[in-house]
Length: 212
Image 1 (tube, rainbow, N blue to C red):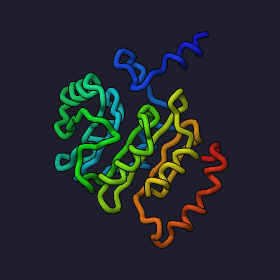
Image 2 (cartoon, rainbow, N blue to C red):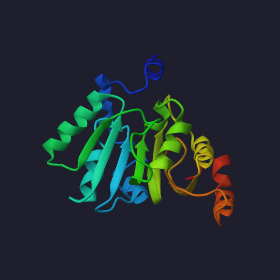
Image 3 (cartoon, rainbow, N blue to C red):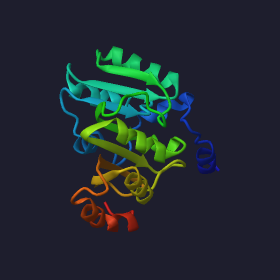
Image 4 (cartoon, helix red, strand yellow):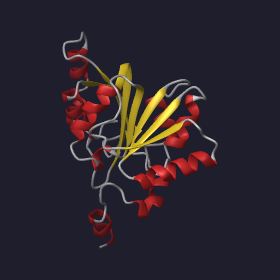
């Protein structure tokens, strides 16, 4: 009964009243794995979609250095306010909040070196639109990182791979099984050399989501 209540009560977007659960580290989505897949660098401008209470934000922002910038975008003002309060407490002045819909990102083409969303994509209606928007705002050679963990709004890796491919994004790395994974993609042209071969090289992963 408790499991059913949790499952049926898991609404999207994640309610601010239950924010305490967002600070609990998730298996396979550790800070070390996030760093290895996202690879944040000093001086970069990065966008986080759906920062929640800032668990990832407060970890990534310091790695960008004083010349870098982390933009955090959420549909809930309460979440953004929470992140900014924590950033101020930690002395982080390089985080910029924006309240908006991830399906229509309010940024120019090619703005970001990287975009990431951890346990957020599945909570947004029309995730295909979110991926297309993420690809649009990425600078040439930029990277998109998606992290998913099994819950009511979880997107299995096979589905994500298909959506990303349709959005003009190709897989470059994946860590973790389908119920808890991080995956990195880069924009590419459908006719770019090597795109077809890379897509074929990863096809086995689409048909066997449990493979890490």
